[in-house]
Image (cartoon, rainbow, N blue to C red; front, side, top):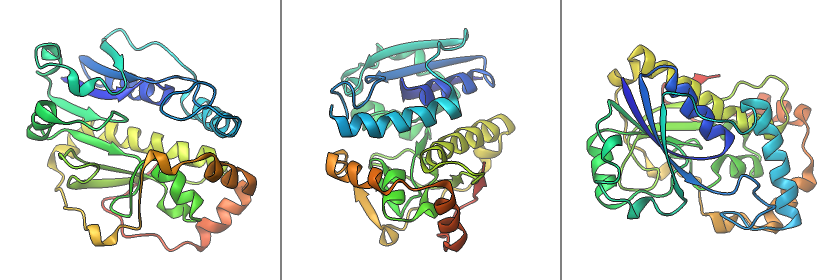
Length: 264
């Protein structure tokens, strides 16, 4: 089996690539690269002391769940490009990656044009980090935590569409709470999404799953990267929420309607 994945270059993205490599003969990884020091270096997120503090928590949680930066496995063929360049890549340049059995999108920029058409036709799977249709857009799990709704922290695995995070849904993946800090809990949702997808591709179950259209009337929040400001991040950090507070919130929460849920 050959798998093509459109993703990024943080440890969590490399972890997915290497997990896919263990269930396939070869993986073609198109990696859109951002700084691996968010908050410290001006990039997708701004450089500031607040962002440096916020992302130091994110990186610590990511290292705990996925390990640090690493190389990809031997059966991975990678194509690193700058974030935002994906829609300028030609079909000829990607030709080696366009003859796979499975296509996955995780953490890539908004895909348009011929590549979007190709991936929709191939029924590519998109990992949206957020529980759709309730939270859509950017940094959805942060906003669920910010809103005091940790029960909405998770991922939606859906078929890619030309709209942003709007394709027909296959299932939701959520983290099991096992005493983690809020930052670790949200990072565990990434692992739950990845592990469920790996298991369901390996077993073939995902190829038999029925896709369900999203009910956009249930949307609670749609966010953009610009909404995540220094002021918002500083306010969230000032709460200094503990694992005990998170546990209490989850116990009292009323969970949303979930589709074929996976808890991991």
